Amino acid sequence: MDKEYLVGLLMNMTSKYKVNIDAEMLGKIVNMSAFRIVEKGAVIQHIGDKTLNAALVLDGMTRCYYIDDDGNDITRGFSIEGTLCMDEGMFGYPESLCEWETLEETTLMIFNTEDMKKFIFENDILKNVYIYLLENALRYKIYRENGFLVENATERYVHFKKLYPQICSKAAQRHIATYLGIAPESLSRIRKAMKENIS
Image (cartoon, rainbow, N blue to C red):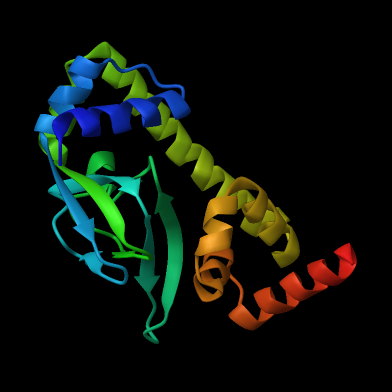
């Protein structure tokens, strides 16, 4: 991929998320990264894999999930354009806690977690971006816990749909259901009831 094009793409993303990183610094990040287009349905990281690399989703969508004792997969979360995936190493985990798969053809910017963290901590602007990412991760965790503690299944779905319309319109119902902690049939009933209430 053309470096100038990639820097422009990253500039657009940083602007969208109101993050200020100049073209020169983004060029250095591009130089530290590899770029890969992954077909839909590919597992890009397994439970227990070393977290040597992480990735930024440039286009497409990924999902991370756990596997329970009965072999069922339970969605932990989704990554869309402008968000990280396979990111446990960025938060200090030596091994992946879950499986990561692509839900559609996905373009990834892959980088070494140790090298990227070193680069981040050498620059105040990037440190602020890293703090922003950590705050978002914590906010996401609190929102998720809050949903399970105080919201019923319908409220969780409505909240999820409001916060993540792009995921809601593209991810499979069974994946959204396990993310919300309900059976796919229950989510189907909730969606049907909501349509009836709108009519």
